[in-house]
Structure formats: C-alpha cells, structure tokens
Length: 251
Ligand SMILES: Cc1cc2nc3c(=O)[nH]c(=O)nc-3n(C[C@H](O)[C@H](O)[C@H](O)COP(=O)(O)O)c2cc1C
Image (cartoon, rainbow, N blue to C red; front, side):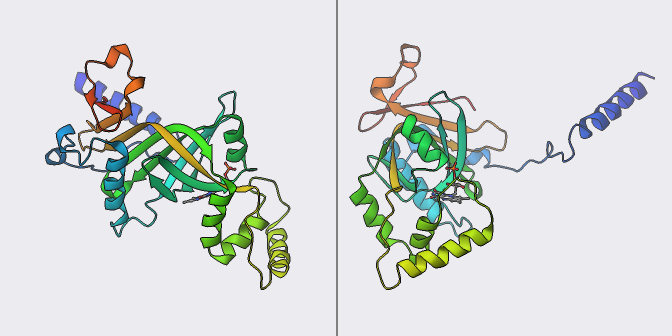
C-alpha cells in the first residue's frame, strides 16, 4: 500500500515538475572531467594568473573545436548598479590586462563611462574550463585604438561608421543604404577611426580559474592582489607571483 502511495506521489511530482515550464531542460546534464583530471594548486603552470591565463588561452586557441576562444561575456553596470551583459571579442592581453574594442556611445560604452568597472567571463565548453576576470577599466588612447582600427578589414571599418551601436533604427534597409553612402564617401581613401570607436582595457584585481568535474565538485582557484586579502581568509591564502595570492573556492 505505502509502496503504491509513494509511487503515486512520485508520478504526481514528476508531472507537476514537467509542467513548470514550456521547455524543460532541468535534466540536461553533461559529463565534465573525471576524477583523474583534478586541478591541483601545485600543478598550475604558473602562480601568476596572467601567465596562467596565457597557458589556458593557448590551449583553447589550439583546440580546433573552439571557433572563437576569445569570445567572452562582458558585464558592465550603471552607476546605480543595474547590470547588463553581452559578448565581445578579446583582442589583446598582456601582464597589465585584457583589451576589447567597442563603440563608446553604446550601452556598454555609456555604462563604462559612468562606472569604469567590468567583469569578463570565458567559457571553453570543449575543455570544461571557464575563466572569470574582474577589474577596473581604462579607455585606450585614441592613437592606440587607431593602430588596431587600421588593421581591421575594410568592411568592418565601414561598419563602424555605419553603426551607431545600441540605438534604435528603422530597418535593415537603413543600414544597407548608409553603408553605400559611407563606402562612396571613403572611396579610394583610408577609413579613419570614428571618435566613438575605442579600445578598453580591464586591469584585473581578481581572476578565477574554473574546471568542471563530473561529480559537480568543480575546481575553482581564485587569484586576488595580495593587498586585497581580508583578515578572514589570510590563513588559506597561498603566495602567488608578481603581487598575487590565491586560494581554492568551494564549488
Ligand atoms: C561572439 C560575439 C562577439 C562580439 N564581439 C563584439 C566586440 O568585440 N565588440 C562589440 O562592440 N560588440 C561585439 N559583439 C556584439 C555585442 O554582443 C553587442 O550586441 C553589442 O556590442 C551591443 O551591446 P550593448 O548594447 O550592450 O552595448 C559580439 C557579439 C558576439 C555574439
């Protein structure tokens, strides 16, 4: 008797669970890395997170299954803390930070103007890895942005003049007409960088390396600047290189 009541309860629960959404992906799960591929602190290729990022990025870049290893979700916020996120392409990184390019009049551009902080997250699905970067943002000098702008394909340069990114427009035809006009304007001429098109560099104060584990006990190693260590986690911090410390986070 109690068996059939239990079974009935389970069936009712399953039915009501399935009806919670039009499209239920709650049971969709992939297997991440196995227990023999755990990420141990002493095995990290570097204890400087920028050097470690380079190692992870190079692996992602050489993985033929990953088409755009430099695609990253960029989060910004208004000065009141209202967040927004979108993908951008990382174009450069070095020991000082991570650079992307965008339209300064776009939503993200305006948010960065009033609140120059951002978070950038990479997810390399085929490697079961993710990296999270947080920091303050500096706008590049126009001359430096121009150097990169002039290396872009001509169609992308024209596109930067056509697009007043994030503004409302009437139609697709509007863009196509404007493209013809801009092409005519710069026929046989170099396309200059528009003033509103600029590079931004995230100068990180935190970089987290995440590696998925099939038992959901994922590996998370976070690096922060040594001056940012709070009293409460002083004991678990390990010394990194170049002014960084690191610790393990619970998954
Ligand atoms: C993979 C991918 C890469 C992108 N790269 C950039 C980029 O480098 N710069 C950019 O301004 N927008 C890029 N975009 C478009 C943005 O996601 C977004 O639509 C646009 O920047 C406007 O965002 P905003 O209105 O929040 O400012 C990319 C989109 C995708 C899907």
